Length: 102
Image (cartoon, rainbow, N blue to C red; front, top):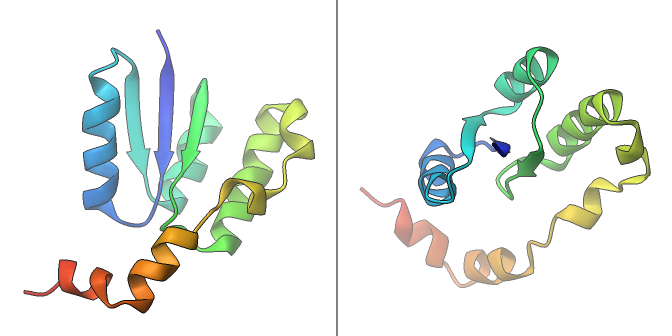
């Protein structure tokens, strides 16, 4: 069975993504940065998804940890996995702020 680890800093977004991925029959786990680093020490995953909500520094730390577990991942550039173009536009237009208003 496919095991997927979602890493991010927005728990609501991670829960939503996990709910969608669970429908595929995969085992899905989601954590923040520290939780991701801890679980990678104990468990193996087929796929690690780094959410756009992670700061670039956290992405680099998680990628380093994945490199330790999967030597072939050492050639990955963390910036290659982040495309925030759409989010940058939404933020610039003020849309993201409207989502989190009380």
